[in-house]
Length: 306
Image 1 (tube, rainbow, N blue to C red):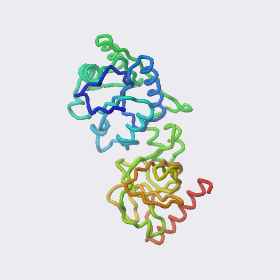
Image 2 (image 1 turned 180 degrees about the vertical axis):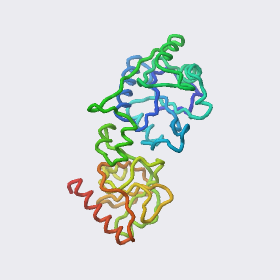
Image 3 (image 1 turned 90 degrees about the vertical axis):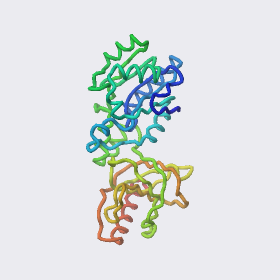
Image 4 (image 1 turned 135 degrees about the vertical axis):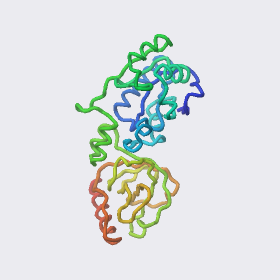
């Protein structure tokens, strides 16, 4: 997949385009992407996505912005995996936010991404003051030579598939509900870094992954399945958070892999959260912490039926 940073360099050729934040790349997004690749194949053009960094809500209200479900890297990997051939990541800043709807169409869609067919969600608004909508795009398309279609909201058993719904499910520890809306278990990717080796001292060595999600979409102790540690996925137990007993200046994901031997430093792992065991807790000391980790391991193994 070709990735463009902004539209200062135009797309190599005409595109079939969709626009959105695509945080989580959930089932609603995937329905849109399926339609994108279907239309792109019919027209013989690449399917393209326009997305934004940072999320517009992070720009306008950084103190109340929602937790990200995916980092930019995770999102790009998911988009490429669902058949997108080109993704343009536009820097969302004051200059971009000030573009009028007409400027957005002319500079970004027509000159930058050379759009021939545009597919948008049914609630898409754009331009300064959110002045642009579907009718505006249809009129602009007639002037500039592109067509527009809107996708209806995707419902899962009567519930709208949305990033906000997934965030709510994760925050409540309802991982099965989040997985239903995502179409897969929720996961976080990251590189294994050196830690303080406390887990090893307690008899439960962990792979430590720095978390780039701030605020965190979920916290606590979980039964997980990890890929990237070998040819096959490995089951384990993970703590996601700030380690109240030991303390950590930044959020950390610690994973104890069951029945695994090997050096994982520098490895890039994908951790799928399958079941929440408990919230983070502060213990009186290392012995109490060790005892609880032992119970967590037993609970996670029981979840996996081992």
